[in-house]
Length: 313
Image (cartoon, rainbow, N blue to C red; front, side, top):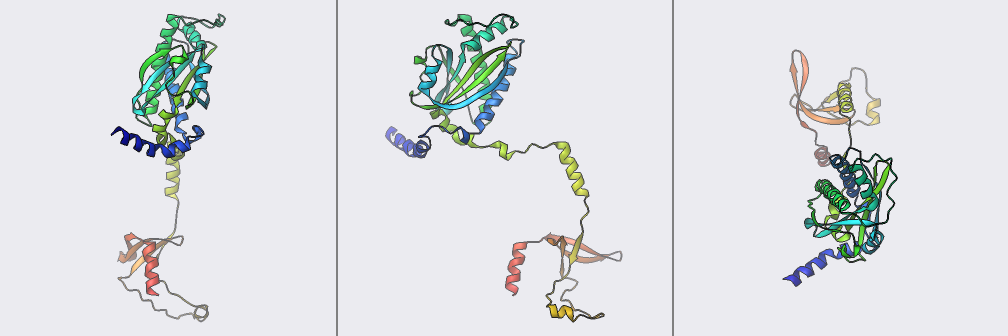
């Protein structure tokens, strides 16, 4: 049974492997950037509960790199948290550089930014590791809520690592998307990293490919109401057409004053209601209080009228 499942998966993943042979196309997943923007907004709100100083997050870059290159750059300067994404059948990495944690520690313990920034190249203390754990928990919850608006998502914390040899979640040559986020707090800086490996993205690629910005149009309700009011008050002229007849140019030239033209229409003939030469409705001719009236029966079916014209000729 397992061999059959592997064979089915290999057939199913064949086109995906061909498309991904050269890496991951971020442009084909526009929803990803929207999700990150939502996540950072929620992160800023969440950190207000930890410190009074405002924390401002902004996306610095989103690019494709191999996992081995990412972890090599992290070594010695970044602490990472590994989360299991069960619905994606994969794991992801969140990372915080030491400057981020130094800045957060100063803000949490009452600093005002007047002291020089920490420049030490040292292992993180137990307190700084606890701060990292708290930030990771809040960032993961914000990212889960942001992703859940697009695709079913849940993140479960697994482990905290400072040595990148223990943070390998996919083969080191696997392409991954790494998003670098800048933190500004107390005039200090730091970076948050979001690493999504290609196997995780393959399971949600179609959901991330939908560009909602092209479907949704932001509208001002007041402007919409004003436009609707003005349009509905606009005056248009309509006319009822009882019958149409074909004339030659010679017939028109021979018309004389007082000449009578006989129509095939009767009192039961339906009248076509037109506006600006556009057919609107078929109506029944009537009379009330000395005036002719039209009662709307049904919209004009242009396709059916076209077929009727062909058959009549």
